[in-house]
Figure 1 (cartoon, helix red, strand yellow):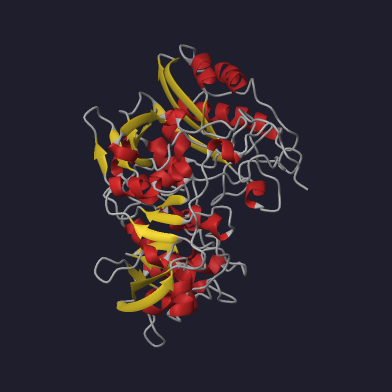
Figure 2: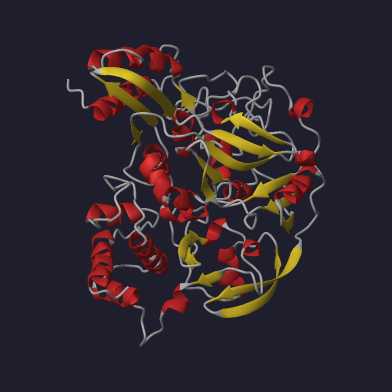
Length: 329
Length: 201
């Protein structure tokens, strides 16, 4: 690790002020991703602002029947929360599908959203990576890219966002609360928080300098059954090849509410609005699910090694919808 | 050789220069509470909890495997919860009065007075080379606490169910953060189940 200075923030406003003071400052919470990257000198902060003692750990009911999850609540506590398990099972399932028990005990909600990609070329400091070193090129484009993006990628970057939690959250229409310099509070739909790579893959979110995630806001649970399904190379402690978060309500054989999001497909957790439109008001049949899967992946681009992920995404979506609606082939 | 890509904006177009980093390691006086004792240290703030335990407190029972949170050999208990000591800084846990309670394998038992989970690992040969064992044992103790608290896992059919049916699939999933290159997994599962069944852990 490169040398840095360290301070423990005592209140959120002081944390924001400390982080905004210099561009080399970074927040640290669980540390599970940041310290990993600092050891490899991929992250090189000159100053760390430790958020762990901030009073941002509470999980509270909101007036509209939703839930406010403090950004410092750790992943294990959120997954174990009785309200999350009963009202937002897709979120508990997504959290429990991610990382290991030790890492979930450490990782914070806010940090999970800000974790960097698992692209091997981002991690390999001898390889070209526009995300790590803007303008250097992308070694993944013509390298080994079996687990890279199939939607929304660019010639500058084909990395994926690794979070499971965020995939469930965008299916739940989560919003995040941000605290900026001077005490400015704003809310952003989580769906709009992460950015596609375009020509600036090193800019991953809409966060401003020093801006701090203080909470994730879940609206009241949507109508319907919820399921998170994750497909990966080993049964546990592995990132997704493809994951699907789906929430489906069926009345009289007809789908009357549906939310679908994919993980492992893009530079951001991916809300599949085209698939939702293809299902809304349609009978809950495998034919309808197949049509929705075609719509969801219509603009997918494979680069060679990851071509299989396009069909895998279609099949995972169809299987998830079938499990939720008990439709049979 | 990396080729330059004109489609990408250089960092300077979007980001100001970094604040200067300190030229060398910055030290900090800190108090760590480990196994019930408080230790005063003067450490480079870059020191991970794992290195503080091993290199400065000479508690070498906690092992360094991958040093990247992938193997679980460094698992310790902080406030009774299992964590990877390699992916957290000692400074994040220090405090004479408000510091965290850290427990390592040395604090669980001693020769002649083993913790029940340690005894069960011996009884069932839950190891071959033994390098992953301190992490496995700390992890197993933390895991049983999670089960007692009713926490679900990825192997739990209904995450809203109040009771956990602790099948072998559940144990394997819950222990997946601890790798054993000797592959003593069947005996590790047997040891944990024995400690659980006898109410020893």
